[in-house]
Length: 117
Image (cartoon, rainbow, N blue to C red; front, side, top):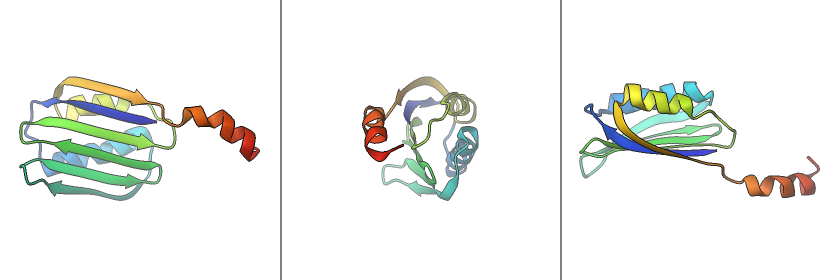
């Protein structure tokens, strides 16, 4: 499953806040941290955070105008509600737009038929 969200925060977004969001997001989805979070200051004054997970990754980008863009991808299904609540509470996102992308589902029946699973 792939989840993307965006919104504007009413808080000053810091590296520490992005790091906490990523770590709490990992816990909320039941995924496993492999590396990170790594937070980088961007040339335009924004921040980018990423964590590599056993299941895939979580990234967060915040520009200098407090717009937040997040991407959560997992090879396993997860409930996006925990991420949404966390984004609203921790990051202070008031206007939130999100989408769930169920990736690769069209391949499952074909894969199962050819792999013996």
